[in-house]
Length: 146
Image 1: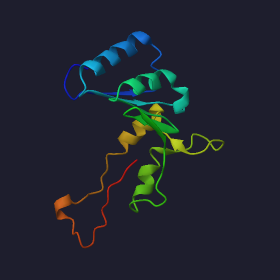
Image 2: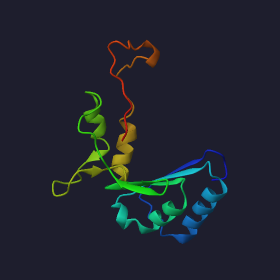
Image 3: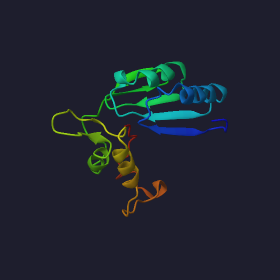
């Protein structure tokens, strides 16, 4: 956490282990260019220890199944009504869906198997043209947010 621009990714850690959380908090305080991305399995309201840290450390972000807390501000996930591109559906299915039929759709990357699958599926054999080779007259590129 002392190295500039360090990123610590946590998946499913509760942050209730105070001796570990204290070291992370100290590192973030001492190095504002470091960041923690905490991918949590539960709903944001059920992640009290992580939320406590995130409310005090702007470089600590939580991504929970129903909401996120970024820069100390929490908010529910919102999906665009239309997909930004025709190929976006399979991509979104890797991080947004259901664990079972009884529950609503939600952010999936707090579960290690979905997190691993998301990154494994980011490897593709499909060839993409470099941005400089895209014809602006036929391209409808736009920024995409999770």
